[in-house]
Every structure is written in structure tokens, then in C-alpha cells.
Image (tube, rainbow, N blue to C red; front, side, top):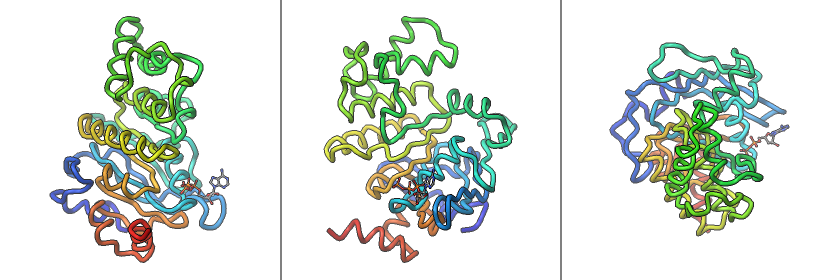
Length: 283
Ligand SMILES: Nc1ncnc2c1ncn2[C@@H]1O[C@H](COP(=O)(O)OP(=O)(O)OP(=O)(O)O)[C@@H](O)[C@H]1O
């Protein structure tokens, strides 16, 4: 894979991820990931990962279990420093670039709280289970300085509606919600601040198939409506197909193939990707 552009970035007219608008790769770079390595042992973690994410683009990171997807996501999201390489954030409309691991921990955390959003596979990791659904949504707005109770509550109800939760349950604690409902609430809590960049780690993992399908449908709508810029980790190629414009395929910590989602899934070039795709097709 060559820098600065991934395969696929030369052809913005191609239609990735069914039913999603096309990625506009003429848009500015949001995240510049340069030769990032974080290894726990040979082939364990991620190694020399290098790509650019553009504004309004959804990048899927796929690969089998243990291929290093979550490790890479943690490094990109500012949660775990790489052994080598840089993650550079370009705030839209701002000529300043932020080298994620050259700034202090406090600034990194502030970035995640104020400008980015992270959706964990397990909603319990992203929600505060002891406070109400409304407070979970309002809390992130309060971190941005909003104090008006009525407006916070209205935002809570509005976002609960957007993620297809009953707004009448705004005062209920998330622990009284089902797993799928908790995941919806976590997504509402993350998106309420309209983050410039969202990271999602297996957002539909651990849910029943029918619950997954509804959640995926909702996510696809939100991605389209909000024009989200997102890095999405999933081992599920159907999720990747539906949400991602482009894909990175990881194997043993390395990116073995990268390009437009439909091209990769319909005409995989690397033997490993061919195996991944065929193992989904073959019962
Ligand atoms: N904190 C850690 N300490 C030691 N080894 C780790 C650590 N985190 C991950 N690993 C190892 O690194 C490799 C990649 O793990 P990672 O969780 O990034 O893969 P993954 O593709 O996200 O897998 P899954 O889909 O199962 O979550 C695995 O072999 C894992 O055991």
C-alpha cells in the first residue's frame, strides 16, 4: 500500500458501501496515520499501519479475531501510545495539526471528550450505568459547557428518539434496558455532541442477529444523515459492506489489502481477503 493515498482514493466516483453517499476524497484529511506500530509480540498488535481518513469518510478495519483491529483502534483513539509512528489529527477549518502522542494526556483526553466520540463493543464500557438515560446523553453536552436543564433534557429526549428509544424512558437507568437498547443509548451519548470523528469497535457485536440488523439499519441512517467521519472496527463483513466507504484488511497486525469496500469484497486480491470473503459466503 502506498502513501499518501490508499488504493481507491483515486476513484471517488466509485460507489462504496451500498446506499451510502460516495466518499468525497477531495475533502480535507482528518486523520493522518503514519507507520503506526504497537506490538505485544511478533504479529500481535498492529505494525506499520499507514493511511489517511478524509472528512465524511467511513473507514472499516476488518480481519479475523486477533488480527490487531482493536489494538489499532485504541492507538488511533488516543487510548494507547504506539511504539512507533504518528497519529496526526487535522481539525477541520483549522490549519493546526495535532500530533496525538506529542500532546499531553490531559489534552488527549479532552480531545476525546470534546471533539471525538468512541463507541465500545460493550455498552457498559461507554455508559454510566448508575445515572439515568437522559443524564448519560446530557453529560457529554455539559462537558461542552451547556448548563440549561430544559435544553439538556430536550436534547436527551430528541436523541433517544433518533436512536429509536422511547423518550418517556429518559429517567430510567440504562441497566433496565436490553443490550440492544443500551447500545443505542451509547450511540446517542456519543453523537449528541456531533463529534468530528467517531471510533466504533464492533458496535453490533454481542447482540442477537435481529437486534443487530435493526441497529445496523439505524447506524446506516445516522451515518448518512450526519455525514459522520468514522473509523469502524468489525469482524463482520456485512457490517463493513453496509457502513464503510473503504476498508483496511488486517492479518497478524499488518494491513494486507486496502481499498474501496465493494472492490475489496467483490474482487479481493490478497489470498487472505479471498479466504475471509469466501468463509462468509460458504456456510
Ligand atoms: N494488552 C495486551 N497485552 C498483551 N497482548 C495483547 C494485548 N491486547 C491485545 N493483545 C494481543 O494482540 C493481538 C491482537 O489483539 P486485538 O484485540 O487487537 O485483535 P482484534 O483483531 O481486535 O481481535 P478481536 O476481534 O478478537 O477483538 C492478540 O494476539 C491479542 O492477544
